[in-house]
Amino acid sequence: MSTPRYVDKGLADDGDLFEFDDMEEAAGEGEEREEREEGEREAAPTPAPPAPPPPSHPCWSCREPVPAGSPTCPECLESTRHVRLISPEASIDRRFGTGPPLQLGRDPVWAQAVAVELSGDKGKGVSRRHANVELTPDGTVWLTEHPGGTTNGTYVNGVQIGRGARIALRDGDVVGLGRHFAFTVLTVEPDA
Ligand SMILES: [Zn+2]
Image (cartoon, rainbow, N blue to C red; front, side, top):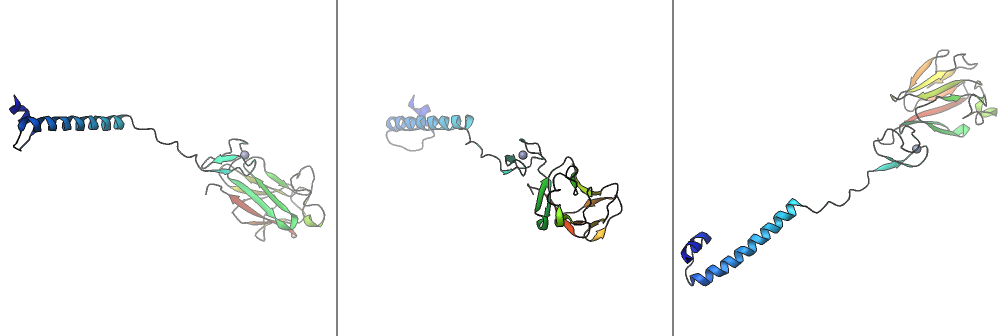
């Protein structure tokens, strides 16, 4: 009876066969139990710690967090890609996304966003309804002179554009409304 067990266990030592066999059997059971526990751990792994929140950045418009890669702010729905229009001389630093064009001029109603800044000498040479800047969903920034034309012209990097023309701007272009007032156009990609 003991011989088959001896063979099954693969023991190759001599000595007290029965005692040795019992010891080995006990140790073998211990190993089997350990292996079974390891198998259970693999079948039901402990849940991974919760993933850290995805990187986000504050919305340029409402300051709420916007997940990285999101094309729009979930809170205010503004496009994350936006245009920044800067004229330190006139204390202008406006940001706007896709949507209605930003109208530029001295007409306090038509060009509500900048008319105050362009009143007086700061906006010398700027027409009441001069031009607009627009960001289209494809990411292009357009400068359009008012269809009625302007008294003193519109310039991109010092070169006058045609009367009522619509021009695609590049990041960093300097736009002149007349010869005395200019602003810089920046396109901003928060996720870049
Ligand atoms: Zn927002």
